[in-house]
Length: 280
Image (cartoon, rainbow, N blue to C red; front, side):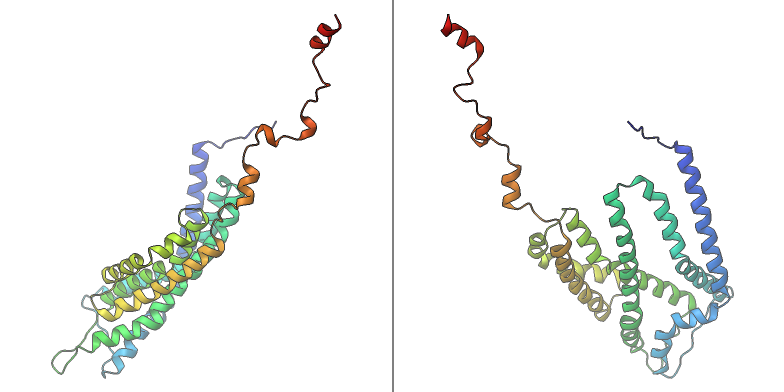
């Protein structure tokens, strides 16, 4: 009989420390490489706003503090470094948690991680290529001859990063609901029955996350409605299947009448004590 050996808590802390150090090194290397292209990266990030501002004839951004541009470039480089180091970060995370998982849990973790990255990138891309151009045109439409939009680098980076993260996370909805259905926490009839409450929640959540304008709110709520329907399809395909009637009857305990007739004692198999009594 094999005995399971458990690693001491200090060994787990040491392993966590080593993996965190390697993760920080990967982020540092990505940050250093991204800082060399800081102007180009910020130009790509501000492209939707600059395009919208060119229609009004003035496509310039400002910085109101002397160190604002420097720190803005640092933040952009750090974000890009984290994105570049994402494969290393997920690898270190996988190697740390995989020894403590069962075999059936391991086969779900890697696909979930890959799909979560895919949906996050899809949501951020939707916000960058679809929502930003229309949203910026709406905001810049309030400019007049006496009122001019002069967005600063710091404010735009804060706004853009929050919006891209928000769209990235909300696009994880199909993966989350499908995983919950796979674990048996929700069912397809439950999702279909509460569709109207989910739609109401989407519009309320979009109003809280996005800026206070109807266009951006609708452009976040409508994809959530589509993603919810995709979640129902995913729950139907990959969700936990209820046991069939045949399986239930097979698993039901057998009674005395269900026993094999060959195992039922025949009258000739009388006990020896009774035969001795009759012979005597």
